[in-house]
Length: 558
Image 1: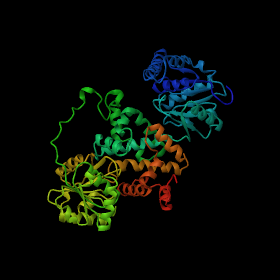
Image 2: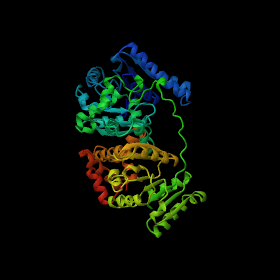
Image 3: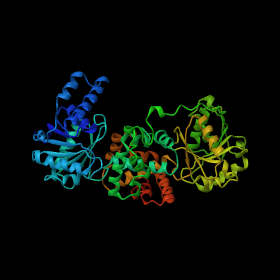
Image 4: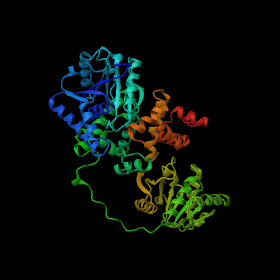
């Protein structure tokens, strides 16, 4: 060992994660010693390594010669004494504090005094683990993400006892392996899991409350928020027992009720329904129980759509309707606004599509529309006034819809004499393909069905939910973004590290700080205030730093 580098690394525990870490190290040209508890476990570890590198050969990522070189760098053993000359040892045993402390006590006896010892814990206190040794200054957390050979993020965790040089050496090693290190302090969940599991748990509570179905919540977050998979699909993939363990560890530290595991999660774990690995979690994974594809429903005629408003959302809805083949009429309020709106549409629609659009300033032109959508500014009195006026002109049986994002739909529906015909149509992304169809206690079931069918004819992906602040996407997305700001505000990690953690560790298309700038701090604060007003959960109130940036007229990345 020279220049502070590591040349020989031990890995204790060769489950899926430990074997993946060993493979990453060997791919980086390091000599690796893999340790398991007995011969049977060692053979399972060998199988993980053979299968993982074998898949890489089949995909053309490795040659057979490169595979042999990688495997030849890994020595497998059941004897801790074989770690005696390692420069660094990484523990990757199951997520139990008592087990990890026993492993570290043993490592402290057999490893050189200058060796760095690291834990791959995802949620436990690195400090508690470190104090089981006589060398807490040489103990580091090194949290890889599964599958380790693929995922680029590694969280490097230092405690108040860790020497900065040990943290720096591990971070340098991570970089040399082609990974991105994010260096943070010892806080339950670190960056990625702290943010991810708060969101996952909130999704579980949302489902348990009957707000929306599993499938609709998953679809909403994939299509509406652009995430790689929905929360329930992800939890089933992670393992519900692991989710429960991580949430309990975070809750012990935070005492935030949003981290207290949702009862449905604990119930599934108690029943042994742990996700994909047991064949059932939130979803069943037995092919014999898969639902048959639904029979196609009778075709709904292309609707005549009316839109009230001239802002970006109103114009996006008009353009979508026209592209889908619908006749659409918009009311912009004044002749000048009508002309400006028409100019916007000319820049985004072809001649045939534009021919389907009629603009004006009189609500009476919407009298025979099948679906009338209010898309004016987010002002309660204005929206109530528009809906009351639409009540006077819209034909009997027409669906009246509001695009409100923060005002309760029921409050607007009651401005009409036909609240049974009123739904919310919430677009989490102005140009996005998802619309949340929001029903109130007054909405007639047939109105919801008509709204869903009409939206589908416009090429939209529909999900259904109840009339609660934030609906689905915003109710899950903005608290997660707010948590990221609180993490930034506390000085735990900088904006680049937080964004990198979620993009590289969770596969998110955008990091939370960058996403706030994209969505708008004003919108974030408005939604969070609505969530707080409804729930009175202090954690849902906008973070002071978020409100400060909004007041200053600044974005986080400016």
